[in-house]
Image 1 (spheres, rainbow, N blue to C red):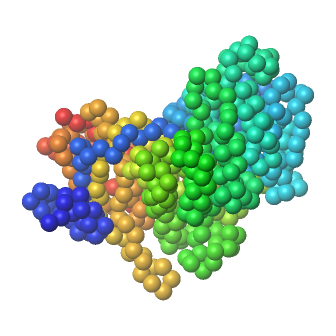
Image 2: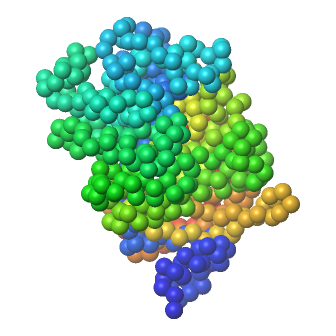
Image 3: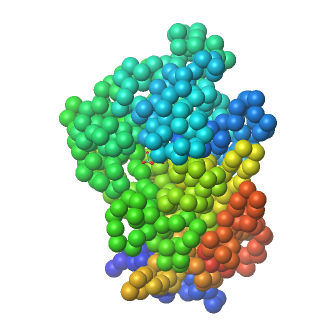
Length: 550
Ligand code: AHR
């Protein structure tokens, strides 16, 4: 006899197989799909840090995107773009990672403190990729935006800083001095005095520290074992000032679990207690290969951000869906040496990555134009994180502004919120909620994938409970079919409901500096019938249902 969970899982993976059991009776409606929300099956608390961001010193992200300078005509707060601050305050941005990415492992934090007119200019890690016509600040880091400015930015937007330390080219001493600069109490150390001299007597209390970045590649070309040795050394002693530090270890290249195993095996060679030096284990996942299996070449495999067919839409979502198996695979691999799961996953880079050509500001490196496709991708990804709250402690979308899957685009005095930014605004309501098991039953989608017919899941999403309020987010990935869905809430009735929907009739739709509101969410009140709800989800949409329960 199947347990209820097994039954639900089998039915759910069976796509169109709607429930016909004594426990879950079929709806008396013509709905083609159904969502079961099991309020008494909590999955854990959704960490607000799942809704984190990433801002690397890369092309237009910092200089132009975030930092415009105090003397700028562009409205700013102490040099930081005001429109960005105003927009970010709306989305509850829990945490921001900085300064990289690959940039982090060539960055000396000491260049970015002290009087701005005395700070050195340095060659940016990304300089060689920049065009000759790129702004000087993109190639030669003027260090006008450093630790003080970043922490101020975080304060202004109501976020926590997450700093990535340089493991490749600075000694461990520079790391603990950075911690000392940020966190030592006022008046206690020479570095606390330097911080005070810059106008910041109070400690910054930075809790999250990355120990390197992509240490298998740009972060030092280490093997997993070599990196574990370095990690142990960097983590062996760090100053704490009554606030524990949360160290994030650099994770694998893609889904390579041999890195995960190799790192932990070497780490615990010095004793199992070494596990406790690691707060989080980083995963990075970019959906980039839209070649439908034709190539694994990093350049040739990429698709276009704006020019795409339906098949590319589904292909991107399939690539993004890999996030879920990455989470479960690496969680299992960690468990081989960390049975109690003291180490959590930190997905500190994620998003689609297209080929160049769609930049809002021509010449901005890695900048791409987010469309409705990226909004659906982002909703899908955030739902995956919500479904694994006990595993994923933090996630950071790559990258905040003027880059890959950006929430915002800006250039000089121009600014817009992308469809991805709107998804973050919608999903902010999940933060801190109790994730509850939710099972989706919908007809599978069939589409032409070269000579074959491929299938794709019909609906996915996540739900979180906040006292008597339920937040339910659902992605309808079909480019052409709406879904009439019956929402069945076990152990409660719906008192009132509203729906916020992000969609457009054109799957390529996007916002630009000139047309800033092409893709914007619409909210309306919806009427439950006898405590239940049937609702139509449009094609190519992300929907948030806010339900008051009795
Ligand atoms: O986000 C862009 C780059 O992608 C980051 O610098 C690096 O960590 C990753 O490879």
